[in-house]
Length: 155
View 1 (cartoon, helix red, strand yellow):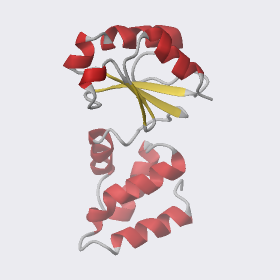
View 2: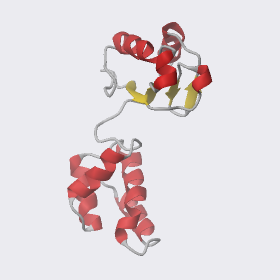
View 3: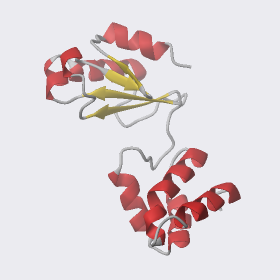
View 4: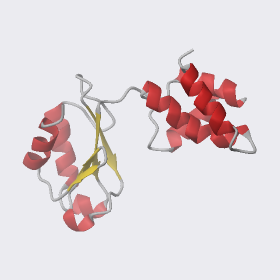
């Protein structure tokens, strides 16, 4: 059992808000991930039992939304915007440079668990491309040197 009683109680409170249990699956995933850091296959099995659904039904939701993770994550999530306007202004080159400097590819986590790197389709600041998001903070008009200063400053 990986879910604490506190999380199980929170899930029960969420389920009481919906006419059908399954309506509380998203809040339950948020609660589980906040406690465990990601939704493993084992956690999906536990949630499936609670919701009386199949584990694959849980994992389909996890894999659909980019706010849920199916593997351990770094302390910081760093996303480079790679949509067309950002790419035209160097985002893909920026991404390759960050990957090379961190020694990982998008979708991976640094060996020290500090950074999980990813790409996002749009961060909504095309005029200030290329840009990246660290957690909830946006950094615009970047080159590799500026981006690495930001990333080097992360604990």
